[in-house]
Image (tube, rainbow, N blue to C red; front, side):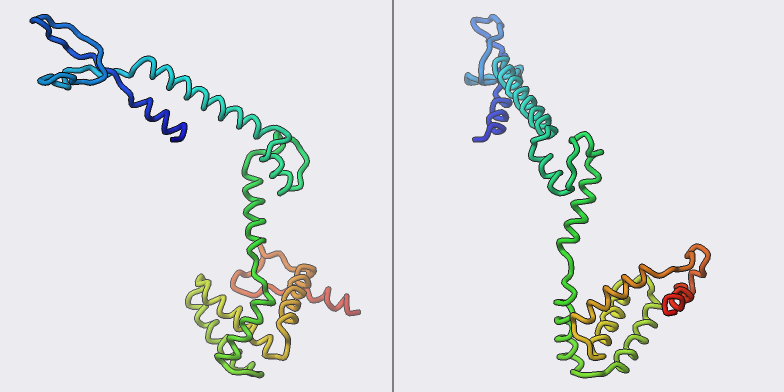
Length: 227
């Protein structure tokens, strides 16, 4: 039996004040049974919590409260497990008072969790190549892929918020990339390199651009670099 079970058991122990009619006289006596004798009505008994049990229960509850308070205080000390985990995850060396609440650590843990469940793009490309070869045949068939992309783009125009339609285009673009003679590793490296290249380019202010038109980067910078 756990400590909490013991507390619950003690909490339900009661004592009753019952009427006792002896020789025509009415008096009240304490009893642990609301109707100890034949013919007694338990509804006439007044139920009480036994004082000794109440005191014992209150004492144990106070002990539990103090123990919880102690643990909370320990969690805020420099050597607490919580603080050590915080330092390990964040790389911080400050005191617990520098945590600024729990929100930053929640955000960091969520980010690390997402990062830890990342998609292995090279493994994904091998999987896609196997599926595509098995389903659509081997070799170069870029025109078929392009035709399929056009179809999916029309579907996106009809449902621009449909994630699955956008993913169809992404998968088809990757399919066209490997069917152009590139390995899985080369496709993934090209994906990473292209994003890095775009990050280094200069782009017009999106606030002044037409939301229905493509936003092109500043190509004059490309020519300057080439010169």
